[in-house]
Length: 112
Length: 118
Image (cartoon, rainbow over all chains, first blue to last red; front, side, top):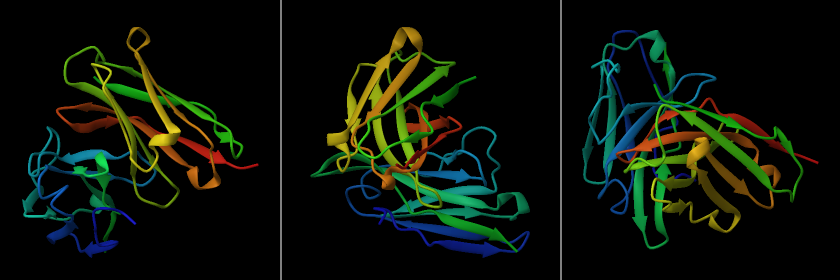
């Protein structure tokens, strides 16, 4: 059971816009930055979005992130076949149990 | 260019201690603000953060695994070592190390699959 909640799957056709949600709490998303990682099949995760909505160099502007309260979203516009991957949200959690990086359960994106 | 690579046993027996080494290049763990973390991923499952060590030797552990984990660094060798005691089949996973700067993980190593089985 992951601390951050994501839908297990999402899908879209080429060219469409899809969004993936990530729900947390006041101790993680509500008070800290959100990060998004893309994991292509058989590869290591790659940073996609940092500090809620910033893209590292090399990440297409088709990818965008947003945060509101204790939830965050990743949007992918102009969907392409190479976007088919698992997507994970992450955040720093500072609860009573101590500081802790927490991840979402991951969302498998299928490009139909 | 920052690169990291994990190394260690591919198979460990239940109750044994796992020792993994992350060897990196392209940055120094003596630079202020820099850290190296470990994250694992059981087959077909989600990512789980394990531990993080900073340039100043500050160490952070997953609360749920803290009693079993130890993270250390050797700055001169550009290595970070993670040990996990009392391994169990549920610890079977791909273990990744990752560079941490400005408080996010990027990039990650390729990962190493560790299977726990008798």
